[in-house]
Image 1 (cartoon, one colour):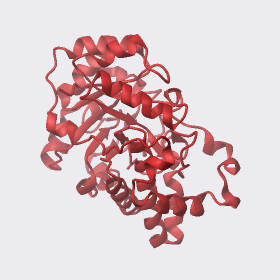
Image 2 (cartoon, rainbow, N blue to C red):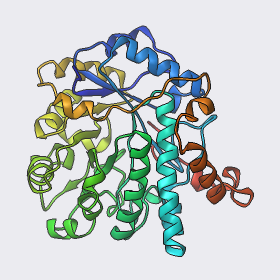
Image 3 (tube, rainbow, N blue to C red):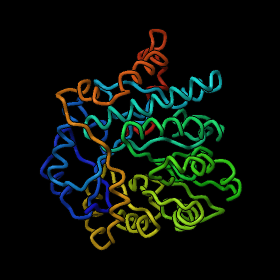
Image 4 (tube, helix red, strand yellow):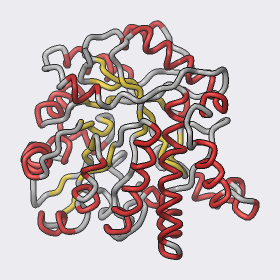
Length: 360
């Protein structure tokens, strides 16, 4: 049975405490961070070990590209999605083709090391948000819709389910909900007609959504991830979305309004989330696992649909990725477009290398 919690682990190999947590009945997922990654072979062994102790578990990672990429050593670099947006303004057809290639390349390499899904794509609009920045494809909804749809087509072609974040949009407010309370005072109509459009218009490609830890004060006094109005009335009833709802990390400052971690997990699940993420706080993870014992299990078929098509390990990343028909071509296209001699990763500006979620 898949449980309602997704937790993290300490290092590059499982500890006895990690194993104890993973075996908890309501733990249905593990999310990996940079501290869990040495190289491709190590990650694959770690994922295999996790599944040895809990077969019904989703393994996730944030491998968006650009600054937010947990898998680096030996993996193909990916551009920030904002680079695709810049290319889109000059050559839309090429940008759309490269968006597909980026989605395929990312998914193939993540699946190759045993990880089911990357929490991608970011569907937030670019703008004033301190934490979104060039993680967004573009400022204009129609450009985001076009590019993200192609990116998700690439993901799905490789065998990975998609997760749109951060519903209904985090890009229009400056505070970073990871470290501060974030409040958006716009009307529901304004949000629906702007920031929510990339989510609403890409629903056919979306398998999951992650709501923002943002309070949309004209709609509800709770962050979207704790709001029945957003999760049930709008996502489930109005948009008719039947995919998985992942909470964002409940250790984030934007989630603290709901109380301690037990209260946050309960509030997120009761509001309509299928799986609640509790990261980078081991004491909180244990408390969450205890609190979750009293919660109902998520819809098993819905959660299972997020399992990735993980290939047999062939001894190294390249050999394993050769099992994906388009991996070599996608990699070549992305490298030539974004990482040629004139624009190597080493030549990126300092701001490009600062991961806004690095404290995770």
